Amino acid sequence: MNLIALPVNSANFSAGRDRQNYYWREDVVRSRIIFFFVLAIFLGPDAHSLDREDPFATHEKALVDAIIAGDDEKVSAILTTPYILINRPVTYACSLGQPCGGYTYLGLATRVCDHWITKLLLNAGADPRLANKWGGSAMAMAVTRAANSGQPESGCSFTVKYLIGAGVGPNESMAIDSGFSMKPLQYVAWKGCRMGLAMGSIGMVWTLRESGGDVNIPLGQLPFASAFTPEDSALHMFAAQFTRNCDELAEAFVAKTAVIPVAPDFDKLNGRGARPIDLAATRCKRQPKPDYTYPTDQMMKKVVEIWRSSGSPDPSPNMKFCAWP
Image (tube, rainbow, N blue to C red; front, side, top):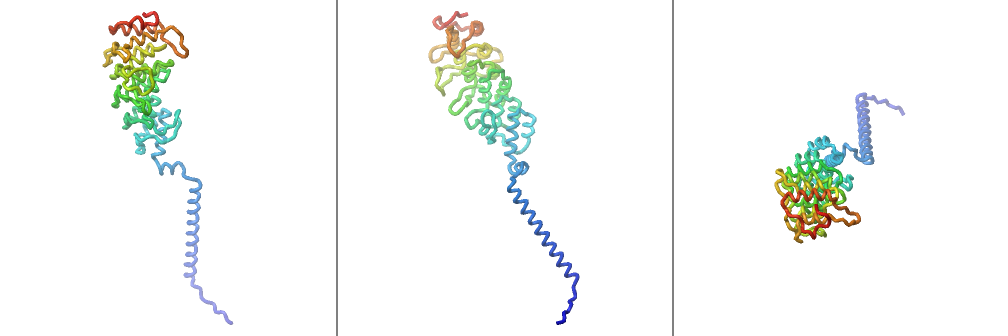
């Protein structure tokens, strides 16, 4: 059988080869896309893709870290971004003695008495009355920090000053915890003189009193088991617990100056018929008691001198437990 050679059309041959190459290149591209897609699933998203997916979460973490570090410049820069909801409770689980989750940004700043960052957050619209999930307010954070510190806390004084400037009254009840609220001066009177911690509260008491803080307001209903009566004021509470190293704090509580709007009432009676000066007299005991200290004669002389300057009479003789100045 004779074979007949067919003519080859070079144009058709070239077009077929190009089509084959095109399909081959398309398969390669498709395979590479699938490969990198699977690789991305196994490796997980990087920091940049996290930022793109949830910029609020990454900026929240950055702001919390900056507040804890006391980096006011970084805080200021982050607050200019649109990804900070200034009054939203923090969800980032940092470590600052306890988790940050549940606090507000302002609560974190006042908790460490960082007055510069407190001012930045207030200027950015932070609500000074917003409580954390345990009920503690921003004012409570600053006051408890100062009252439980044995070191001078000038930052707490300025922090309280900024909170008052933002509309928080110096005599507003502050939530310390769920079901536990007191006025700032009452809390300081209750805690500030115990265990030698008076130094942390001196400047803050002056700030509160110069802003209208009233040491004469009665406690009212007691939120905890206590020896005090509902009629006891901050002045009664402080006098009843007056101890060593409290002379400067005592002066802040009893001072009567032109810049202090509300003068202390030294003759105000509590539920047991005792005045603050009467309770101070009972602190001048001589007999030792474990784990507690009593005022020295020199300190008591200073306090009595301030009280006598108000015109109030001395305590009755049966209330004096030591040589009265």
